[in-house]
Length: 123
Image (tube, rainbow, N blue to C red; front, top):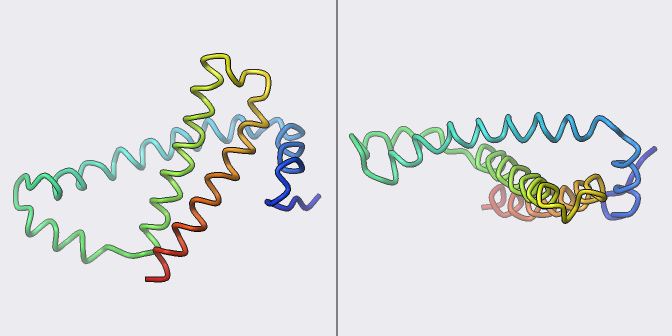
C-alpha cells in the first residue's frame, strides 16, 4: 500500500498496522545517539580550541561535505523527534497514541530534513 507523506492520517494508520516500527524506532534512536556522540567529540575540540585547533579545523574542513551535513541534520531531526515521543510516552501524555505520535513526529522530522537539506545542498 503506497502512503502519501502528506496524508498524516494514512501514515498514522500504516504505523499502527506495522508492529515492528517501535523496534526500528528504538534501534535507530540508539544508532543516531552513538553517531551524534561520536560527532560531538571532534566538534567540541575544534570549536573549543583544545590542542591544535587550527590543524584540526583544516582537516575537518577538508572532509566537510554538504551531503554529510544533510545526513547529520537527518540524524539530529530523527533523534529529536523520537526523543520527544519517548518523553511524552514516559510521562503518560502519549501512551495510548504512541504509534500515531511516532507517525506525526516523523513527518515533522522529514519536513525539517527536506527543508534544511535543500538549503544545505543548494548552497
